[in-house]
Length: 252
Image (cartoon, rainbow, N blue to C red; front, side, top):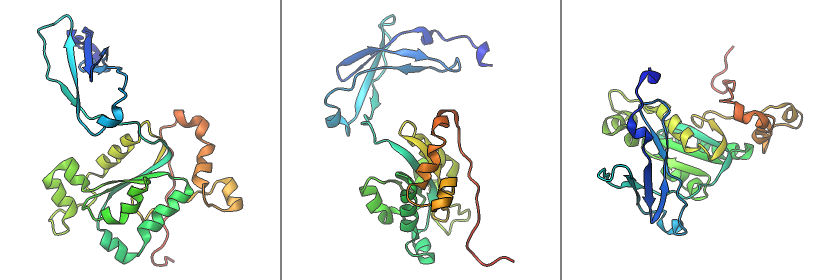
């Protein structure tokens, strides 16, 4: 289908970009024939740290079409972010008070346990804003990013009510879970070598590699497990883990 399309003429035009007094000629790439991505490689000015929280804009023009005008496109500069070897994502969590009532201290134990295994950073999402205070110290220490009211941010008021109001007729607290997972994974693109999806504090990773069976799993065991896969990392799409149920009433 895409190959049968006629290549639009604008794909062949040179866009000139200017931002903050710097100028560059763009490279245009089209992956499907009916859209295009323009790359403007402009050196970051020395004032980047001072303007990181402000809004900048990029202006586009075409030398062959001087009459063509386009309003400046607003950009939000982002400074280079800290890199991680192993990071983790959660599903949209909900009802911290209920969780704390069932198992006091579980959230902190869950986080600290996985930090000990080798995870360096968590992206934590919730549906109702209830995890803000419990996560405050982890966010301030740089070990976690907290995204509250995920359904409100992504889906708007209707989805927010369905995800955060227990009295709603169609209460679905983990609504938009797939979208949340994709959001989190893309947040770590270029920032983390490995990203693990740990849905909620009732799931614990357990690493039992051959070496750790001898000395027992402990601090850094997840990092050691991934060491063996490191040479193949760029050829892997994902690593599947087996789930083992534990806890609860005895089953004969």
